[in-house]
Image (cartoon, rainbow, N blue to C red; front, side):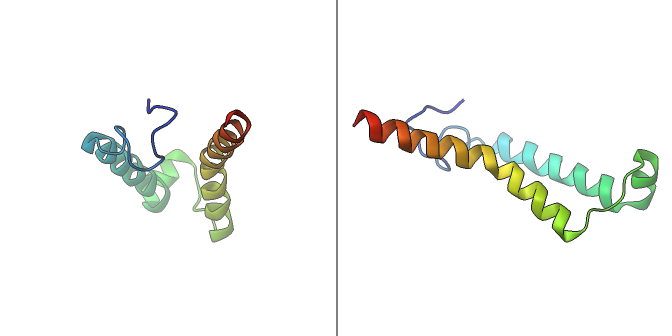
Length: 79
């Protein structure tokens, strides 16, 4: 886990190439599951419309935003 005082996008986690490999594999498997008809049929899923993907992206980024805002508030109160 990255330290509380380390930058969001440049830290020991984001410098680890295996993290990026894992992310790419996860995104690739998700894409296969959603857009390959045989896989989608087996899993019983349907492609999301653009609005659905935007909702997924927004809620995926929400924890990052909340944590960063919390850090800013805590830093402002202590310093």
